[in-house]
Structure formats: C-alpha cells, structure tokens
Length: 400
Image (tube, helix red, strand yellow):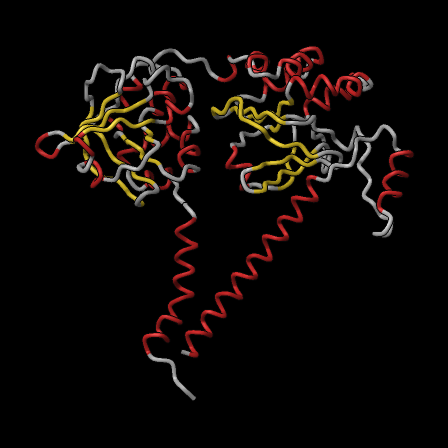
C-alpha cells in the first residue's frame, strides 16, 4: 500500500484544527465588565458603564475601542452632579466605533484621525459633535479631544489595558473628554413621550390607538426597565381598523400591549435570541406570546395567525428601542388561527377553499414562516455538503 508523504499527512491532520480556528475567529466574544474587573483602578468607570447600559452596547459590537479613565478622573466628572442620562452621553463619547490598538495610535495617517463614537451613533449629538480627534504628538504621546472642543486635546494616552486585535481595545486616557454638547442636560427615557416619538416617525395612527385605549400608560411605565416596541405603520393600521373596531375595549388593550416586549432587544439581540417572546399582554404561560425568527438580515415576528417583518428602526437608545413592522401582530387569543391544510397533496386548492368558507373572518393563512423554515432546511443541506467536500479533500490527500 502506498504511504502518504509525511508533509501531506501532516497537512491532513492539521485541517480539522484549521477549520476550528477559522470558525472560532468568526465569532466575537468580549465582555467589557469582566475586562475592567481585573483592574480595580477603573471600578467607578466600570460601574457606570453597567448603570447606563453602555456595557451591553459595547459587548454586542464587533469592533470597538473603549477610552477608560481611572477612579480619580471619574470623581472629577461626578463632582459636576450630572444626571445619569447626561453621564451616559459623556461616557458614550469615550467609546469609539473603530479599532485603535496601541500600535495603531502611532501609525495614524498624517498623524491625526477623526473617529465616530457611540455618542454620535445615538443621534443625540448634533453635527460632528460626537466625533473624537486622535493626534500623534511629539515625544511618543497621543492626544485625545472632542471635535467640538475647539481643537483642544484634553487627554493623553496612558497605557493599553487590554486588546483583542480588531475586535476590542481598551485604552486608558488621562482624563475625561470635555464636550459641552455631551454634558448638556438630557431627559431620561421616562421623561420622553413614547407616543410623540411614534407620531413623528410614521406611526401616528398606532400612537393614537395607544392613547385612546389607555394602553400608552403601560408602555410608558415599562420604559425605565427596558422596552421594545413594534409599531405597525399608518397605512397598515388604517387598513386594519375595520377589524379593530369589532374588538371589545379590553381586547383592544390586549392587542396593543401585544406589540411591546418588557425588555430591551436590539436588532442583534433579536437575531441571536430567536424563540418565544413574552409581551406586555402576557398574563400566563403560553399566553399572548409570539416567536422571533431571522433569515439572514430579515427578522420576523410569527404568531399562530400572521407573520410580520421588521422593516426599520425608529429609535434605538437603551433602554428603549422602537421597530417598524409591516403587519399588525394578531394574537391567537383574539383571532382565529390560520388552519394548516390537511388534504392530500393533489387537491390543496379545494381544502383551502373549504377553510375560507367556514372561517370567513379569519386572516388569510400566512406562508412566510413556512417558507423561512424551508430555507433553513436548505441551509442544513449546505452544511452537509460542506462536510462531504471536506472528507473528499482529506481522502484525496491520503491517496496522493
């Protein structure tokens, strides 16, 4: 029997390890709270990242740089007696949405760079006030300053705290960055009017229903603890009104509360947490819930009656996020469940026609979820083909 050369055999044995490495590098896993917990001098900074929910925002981003300040610098910030939501804006200015390791700081093109921060990404920073200027100075120093601070570099680079290349970099700077816009008084989420936000973003009809039914109070009460709202657009609500008017007052409230989840769920969280979600209307096990599914970048909300698709984000600033959806979410507790066809395959149309005649007021059967499931099955076959290709390649190496 012909033996495979040592070089080829080594390559064959190394392939499984190579595949593991390739898959592992594709997944990011960092936790800013754990990173900073190893360094007691940043305990106050770490505490406020958690308190303002910025820590979770940092952890779910693929590429991020955190400009950490020690306890003494945080004491200087806290002495200004700013509200928690204003402190959040200030700290947001210290989170860069790009990767800057210690080496990259000294390799900046032309010696200076302007980079966006989470403060800019929230939309709360007017103009370019959410950008930070990074400049490579003489003597090996690197300066940092808010773009709107007249070009002043308030802080300098102290040291690298921790780095996972091109994923997360935690750098210590000498003091808190100064920004009049970031330190401006900021209302907390509970001071914001959800219905006003909805009305300005193409969901006025839905907002009006919340107010007229009294359901808006429940939504407002849940904002501080975290709230996700799914808002059907004005066009969708207007076409749904004939069915809505047939509901009793309590049923209307339940339907509207069904469009809220009492926790904050960003788009990435929805994609990674596929499954059953309880809603503001949930009052017991398996009551008024729906299933979240995603097919690539498309996220759907599937009830037993209808499947709605998220078509946009109206507001995303933890602890509140508001999504726009293309259908009204219909709970099985209030609307007839779309019957699945049970007739033999040769005559599906006859079965469908019979179902329509006996349940005239039930919504039309939604097939989007079934199509999504079929696509998922196809994805599984692709994984099987990948394994077969890999095994064939390995056998080819042994036979050479």
